[in-house]
Length: 159
Image (cartoon, one colour):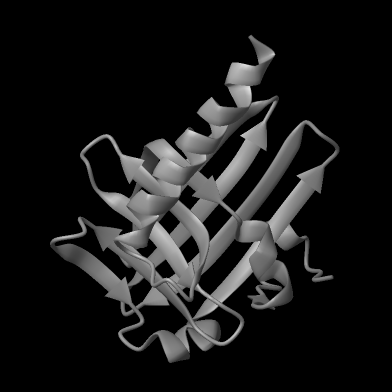
């Protein structure tokens, strides 16, 4: 029975990777990818020199930011908070015109949560949660992106 688990995990991971391939280029790292309950995807693809956020379907992206992925590392910031094993939060912050996006990956009391929180200038906000095919490597961006010192999660410090 235990020999069946490894091939099943490999097939599951390979399926997730191939779904992300429709959004991310082959030379890019998948920092974040998931599908929502409405069959949209949320993704963050790039490398140490470029980064781009995508939301929508592979046939019709609703948002690609920034337009030129080479500008991405200057357009994003990251914040994190870790409190033992009870609470771990990673957020990638995106400011696009009058709307803020926070791609999140957090674990609270062993329950994982993934998605994006959208906040408009009139302080209306909503969350789009991931429902399946989740890949999260946001922690890898801590060495690439600037830390948002003003975000309360960072407690005024960046390390």
